[in-house]
Amino acid sequence: MIAIIDYGVGNLFSLASSFAFIGEEAVVTASEAEIARADRLILPGVGAFEDAAKKLRASGLDRVILREVQNGKALLGICLGMQLLFEKSYEYGEHEGLGLIQGSVKPIRDVIQEDLKVPHIGWNSLRFGNEKSPLFRYLKEGDFVYFVHSYYGADCDGSVIATTEYGATLTAAVANQNVYGTQFHPEKSGSVGLSILRAFCEL
Amino acid sequence: MITKRIIPCLDVKDGRVVKGVNFLGLADVSSPVKLAQFYSDNGADELVFYDITASAEGRALFTDILCEVAKTIFIPLTVGGGINTVEDFDRVLKCGADKVSVNSGAIRNPDLIREAARKYGDQCVVLSVDAKRVDGVFRVFAKGGRENTGMDAIEWIKRGVDAGTGEIVLNSIDTDGVKQGFDLEMLDAVCRVVDVPVIASGGAGCKEDFVTLFQTLPKVDAGLAASIFHFGEVSIADLKQTLVQNGIPARI
Image 1: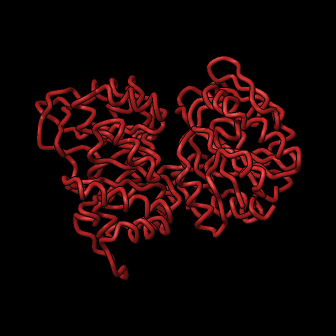
Image 2 (image 1 turned 180 degrees about the vertical axis):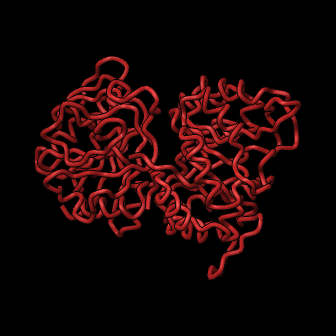
């Protein structure tokens, strides 16, 4: 069973639907007991980093996530959920994240030329580098996924498992042992996205 | 490389897709769920659903259908039509919509954009504008293009972006239905003043119109159309091949 962690940020309908579609049992939950029972965890998120990090802490779910990850449970952060895995974010100030991925979250605007629009929104292709993560076992280099973001994971070279090109090479996905994160939305990336969720369920 | 998006638009009334759909080999051509699946399978990058129902029953049916679509189709969904309040945003977002398109509702209450952007994020708010030349000036029309508001379209769009609009759909009434190509002049005027994505709508008659659009105006991010896709005059899969052959990035 997969626990989609509900800490009051964003719309989880599509995420829950996508697991149902691939035949995986998933629950949207804020219950510590249910999260402890789950085999795998999803940390979703849209909106602003500071607000999301505050809600995660206020709910006490940050501790629950850290404990479950420590116990070896697989975790996938999606979009802002990926950014929350980092040590800190520079979105409107400086805010602390979960620290499961080394690095920080910075504005895309700082690294791309002025005529490119921010947010980076739409379908962009993935590059995997030398070694393909098991998360992407069903994908091929150049497959397209759907992005919507204004900030990106920086200073995380050791954890990057996929990149995308948007005026610069941007972090598209990260991993550190049993912790995974995608900047893009697998639940909005058609069959390519669903195959990533399937691979996550098989980890 | 980021790709140009191709977006079919479905008008839904009383639970069915209207405005004539004529597909070969598709049994139930007016089922929103089946059509959405068909488009998704054929390479649509996003789908737009417009609720053109007037009744409360029709509205409830629309959200039921939206939920059905979002349970089986995993590409971005934009919903428009009858969006007048933040509660309307909530209603469709809970059913799996990713973006919400406002038009007349924002003209009546411009604060709607700011309120919705603050609550759901800029990326969620799409401002759809029906514009037409009147004495050489682009004017905003309301009520499905029937009523001249007298507002300057460029000013209205700038104001919308300042308030938190994440994306603009510009529908030119002058070119809509004519099938002689998008309104490049009007689109250019808008692209010059905004830095959010601009989606071109109105006027596409063939694949080449999309090639011309993206080659002439590289700042346009997406092309939206309805009848040419519904009637099979242009297949999305073919269209995207043509874009790529012309050096325009598209998802295949």
